[in-house]
Image 1: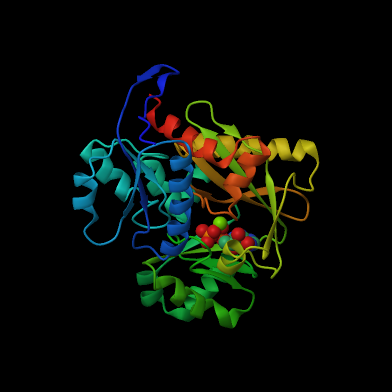
Image 2: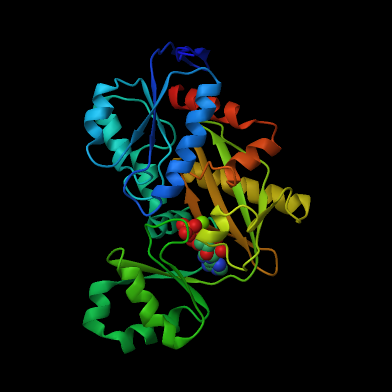
Length: 328
Ligand SMILES: Nc1ncnc2c1ncn2[C@@H]1O[C@H](COP(=O)(O)OP(=O)(O)O)[C@@H](O)[C@H]1O
Ligand SMILES: [Mg+2]
């Protein structure tokens, strides 16, 4: 153990960093439990690789620990707000501690589904039609007018989403008029804006992208949920969701999706890794739903599965992410 982070010459950047890696995990988001599992898996992988590793729970007075542990690199195993949204990235920038994954702006953009979709539209990347409902506007207009306006722009069925949550928290399937206002009110529990997005009935496929300047898409995964909805329970319970590799799609379609995933990664300024989630309509047209800059890394997670399909073992993936974090 106590292997130094001595990675020699890696692409253009000369890296000779030695010291401890802090695995930042837990935190205060609704996805704390998933983060603890991702963090534990990463911690074990880095121990297996011989690194000097310490776990740092980003809850309570973690800044003291962050400073006193004197870490040389932060491995971010956090999900959701305060972990995946640019805030911890900003803190680490100010402390001069390198970290895995995307930077401040990219993290913030990808954490917010509305901001992500606006970027996608600008770049000509396909995403389901949407509109944004602001809590104030709804208060001023009243619920009836809000419902009318939504139905004028987006036909039922549609999704209502709290834009900055993950793991299907704050995501509602709206099929009937009577459910519109209650789901908006639920979404407003998380913030002032709600995303209303056309529901696409089709196959879900996720593209894991790895790299910095020349990112590559790993093998795609088709996701099938035993419960019909790929929700929190399905995602984190072994056996409740199936990962189908390769997806049951023609080779050319898979290449198109991979290409869109890489373009999305670049357009949003991602770094290291990201998972781009797609849904395919009945006629096979792919739509980008969201970008996860710190995807789950538990034993049932998609990104590690995609890496495995590309011949990258979990421990090697963890080490690769450190190398990418240090690449200049
Ligand atoms: N526009 C949509 N049409 C159909 N299903 C959707 C749509 N958006 C989301 N879903 C379903 O809800 C799940 C969670 O939505 P997503 O936007 O990916 O949020 P999260 O951040 O919670 O993963 C998706 O995996 C998918 O099953
Ligand atoms: Mg998702």
